[in-house]
Length: 155
Image (cartoon, rainbow, N blue to C red; front, side, top):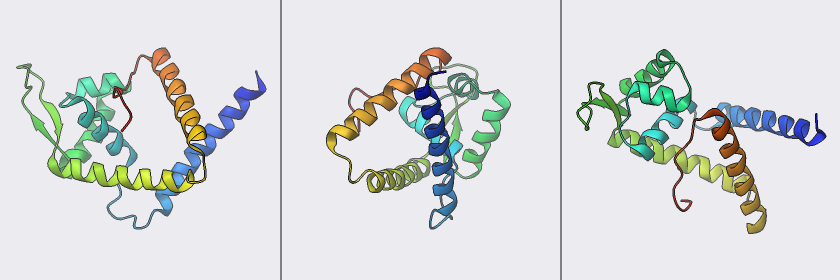
């Protein structure tokens, strides 16, 4: 195994730990969104209404897992069930106005935290890091078949 691969494994483990610690230490904890809710809402916002089956497929998860995760969104009013706009049998989930508002708040909190951590990085370092992460995620998506829609330009 290449030394660089073991270094990358360690750094990814630390990223996961730091993300978990940030969630635990976030002030205030009240009102923060669970990671699974955030990711599901981001996908619904990017792609529009999706069925449980579609969400399970794009995330590579069992439908029962997605059912549990989306039940949380439905109970909290962040998403709603609607008839399939294309006339299909399966009902779809759509982000609500409240869901979009909470998603934007959560994303703003995340971006503010990243800006704080990366505040002393040069534009070149930031660009190289973003490019490396995008390539890494694209490699994972290519191997796993679970692609995340990407905008033409970063927002």
